[in-house]
Length: 380
Ligand SMILES: NC(=O)c1ccc[n+]([C@@H]2O[C@H](COP(=O)([O-])OP(=O)(O)OC[C@H]3O[C@@H](n4cnc5c(N)ncnc54)[C@H](O)[C@@H]3O)[C@@H](O)[C@H]2O)c1
Ligand SMILES: [Zn+2]
Image (cartoon, rainbow, N blue to C red):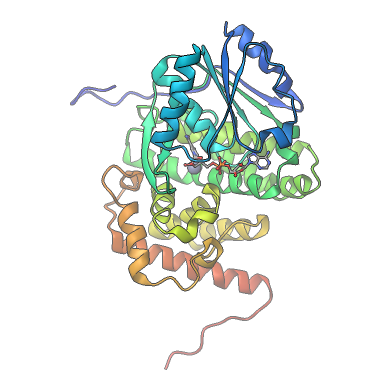
């Protein structure tokens, strides 16, 4: 986008339209009609028939394809073939982050319209113009960047509130990173995913995301445990999806997401959701950045209250040794990783120590809040 030597312009990217509320899923056909699409390919997560029944069966002219579970080059290729053979004019991605990312990676290179319908608020993937691609075995492979954001994003809060609460909490973990990562990239003046320097809008939305999560996160969790759609749920779904999505794409990512990507090299972490690993990445990032204790405590206490991981044991890594953490750290520091957007040079050893410091702090705080003393022995 920018030629060498040119100053970095500020760039802000956003989807064509964002619609959120109870029952908005029912507007899919109308939205497709306005985009002039008559032959959509609807790519759905395997749980969709169970959670939506036949709600999407009636969309006229639609071909239905079931997503196979990983946003991998093979899956993107498979769905692309079906789209091109059937002459699809739009892709609709219905499901979690991986289904949506696959839908984007199919629609964009083929120049098709794209509508995203998240069934969980587990990530900030819905609004962005990029896909995170993995190997078939779940190891992070690459980011793919596209020219266009989705034409429309339909977020049905009734569907989201009925999903297991762990997904909403994971989305809060993903959203918790946005403000800190945008701040780090803005200080370094690095190009964000959208292709330019952050605007005030992106930084403000990222901050609003953080404040909203801290203020309403716990209330939203409690409501979703009862499948209820309350104003707190609407606010947190907006924070997880729109605020975090616009904030990270045009504000920039930094250490927390690289640590997440690094963690995916260990199979044990594959049973934890993206946002859960990102939350641990956030605390590690705060350690790496030598943030004041109050900030670290605010984040860790919030994670404990809302039910996000604060320690290695919370993401399947109980008893992990330094050697394995070094593998995580090396992957986190790979060339091109967003950890290099931090305003100082980062080396793997620093990341290992930051993760250990995060783990120690998280465990200590959890014990304190439980009323267990857990104070260290006097050193001898
Ligand atoms: N492109 C981006 O901008 C971006 C941003 C953040 C994350 N991501 C990517 O998103 C992915 C993570 O997304 P995810 O955590 O949603 O994972 P996911 O897509 O694998 O979905 C998680 C699980 O939820 C299930 N599910 C979906 N809807 C449900 C519902 N209503 N009820 C019950 N179960 C339901 C799915 O079957 C799946 O097993 C990662 O690949 C990550 O890299 C991308
Ligand atoms: Zn994320």
